[in-house]
Image 1 (tube, one colour):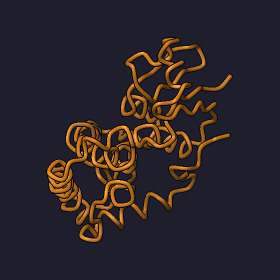
Image 2 (cartoon, rainbow, N blue to C red):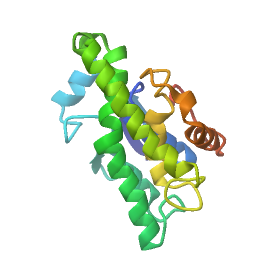
Image 3 (cartoon, one colour):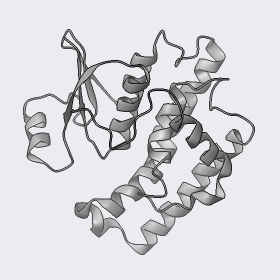
Length: 206
């Protein structure tokens, strides 16, 4: 019996877990539940989503793990994707906290306002301009670090890179951010896309 992943195909938070599983070459059963669908409503009603949102990874013994970055840490534990020294591990976790607290809250939110019809009424010119400026500022933090480092937290790709890759790689196509001003980020995105086992956002298991 393999793990089961409840994920939203269009969501960066769900994609990061699918990408981590692919890079680890771990088999799993995928249950895709898109935003505002009957399937997602049923999953909520059945209690399949412990914290009320996707993704959720269900282990072989039935234990359900919510929260994308917590799932990444679980999957990376004991593998090269989780740095084994305390300082590098702290750096990795720091970038993951940054991703949820500062990055996702502007990069993913702007993408959602542009792409989900039910949120279009929130996409006022003022709000979109505010998110654009805030997002560029957040991306500049990454740019400054990646200008001198190939990876975010260690000398090799780590769980931190996967956490931040998901929404960053679609920041321009989905969020409308001007990525040409971030050459170091673009080079980092290319390095991740070249990793063995890499899968894209739309490469969901059958």
